[in-house]
Image (cartoon, rainbow, N blue to C red; front, side, top):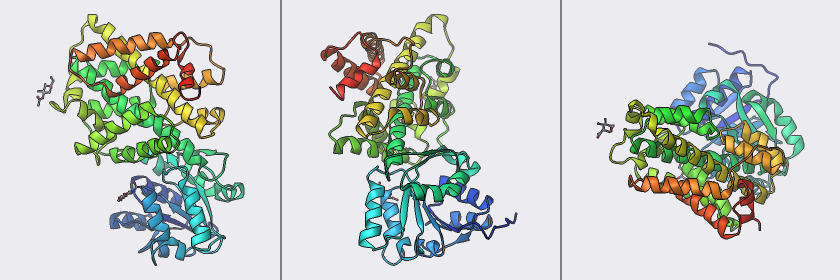
Length: 440
Ligand SMILES: *[C@@H]1O[C@H](CO)[C@@H](O)[C@H](O)[C@H]1NC(C)=O
Ligand SMILES: *[C@@H]1O[C@H](CO)[C@@H](O)[C@H](O)[C@H]1NC(C)=O
């Protein structure tokens, strides 16, 4: 198929044609933008060529004559490589007043570091940067329907609008200057990363207890225990499908970004740290390049297909209380996770009022998040369990799992956090009062 490329649209340089990047670049071509691409993988460049783009041999060549330089590489090291590598870095090829759009998920402080290198070390004050982390996965990248958060100078955000509109459907402009969009992304990843890990912990438990994993899945979908990630990832667990829709290695990187932010601010992130360690166990077990749902295998090392096999498990009516307990446990963990995420958001100077609707439309959402966020904004009047009730449910689940010699890492961490709250004299309040543990 030949694409008619409009001469009026500005040329875009696109570096990082991985699973998401190639879809985004092709979508820009389909919208009539001339795209020059670079990637270390020659197959990706061939795909771009076949769709009417041009292929460059390095980022510097790629940047030539481009008004926008989009960077969709995997991490901050690769961004520095793409921009600043001796003789091949884009910085040596960017034309005057070019705009750099950083789409990778990075530490919130990193885009500002890049800007100061561009302005000071390379004496290019004409170049401006926005950070625009994306969310939504490979399919939505190809359709141009990503969720995109952007921050940076207002006039530069405005000039970049046509590009962002081509790539995304839900566009959010985040106040607070360069790097703020990555603060929002960080909160989303905190939630999303924990939700996958706890989904795995729970599904492993259900299978180990000899319950029906498919039944628990269906039950959770229409319950307050629902999370976007649970709905999206558990089907991979139920079918032993570890083809990398989203590679586990991404969450090794993203949970590290989350916990580093906590470490650098001496801000405790109990649940996120527990989840990060689980991802590390999974990487040690060799699952890093496969789908992140494959983390479930660390809980069932003696039989790696136990969760999918248990989808056929016969169900007994008198098991219902066990399903209920597990579903409540998931809901409570999501609730505590939401408080931890929102406590971090407040620490990062994000407004809960602007953050909550973005998360609600992104992969980090859960029913408990919605409830906790509305309560924090003083909106929701629905009853939530007290901390004591939640503590008792998790304690019961722990004791049950012990009978099966099953490890509950995230559950245990959440339970200890609730007990810490009781030590602090809390108990009859709902989950939002846990905020006091972070800001007395
Ligand atoms: C980025 O990924 C590369 C592998 O492509 C790795 O060598 C490097 O350590 C990573 N950097 C960060 C900050 O994660
Ligand atoms: C794993 O567990 C399932 C369900 O109990 C069983 O059917 C299957 O044979 C087991 N596989 C192995 C390798 O033990």
